[in-house]
Amino acid sequence: MAPNLAASQHDMIRDMIMSKSLKTDQMADVAGCSPRSVKAIRSNLRDTLTSVSQLGSVLESQGKYEEAEVMHRRALKRYEKVLGAEHPDTLTSVSNLASTFWSQKRLKEAEKLELQVMVKACIQLQKRILGPYPNTESSLEALNEWQMENIEMEL
Image (cartoon, rainbow, N blue to C red; front, side, top):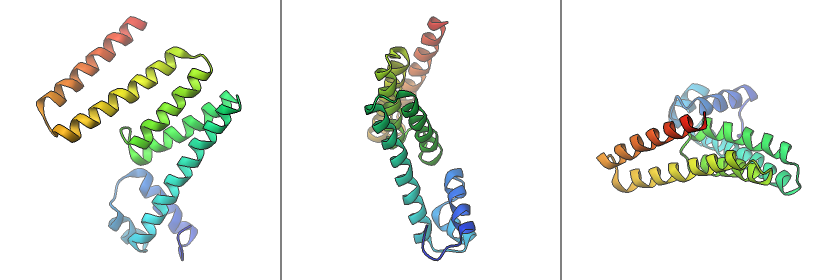
């Protein structure tokens, strides 16, 4: 817990971080604390998510695949909420879940997740290098069409 904060302040800040509705300074104003305290809580939250994800990997290495899947899904859900779907840590979490699927011989599910990671990582790179460029948008459109075709083929 951040120093000198009541549990209720800590919980309020955590909820604001999860909702992504305010900037750090705004959260500090609402909670009546310093921006440094908000940053400390955000850092602790990410550390907790990393620990949950690492626990999933340990469970997978022990052959406890169902438990590993639960931990990886829990981490992924929180990463998506806290950091967003395209954040590198979120993509790593997706890949960790895919690894558990590979270990369970759930190959179609694993392949689908790994493809998702690769495509999002490529689009991130394209956006970062090219910025708002027409080819970036057309790549996204083509990806969406391709995904729809694959969904239809599976049905």
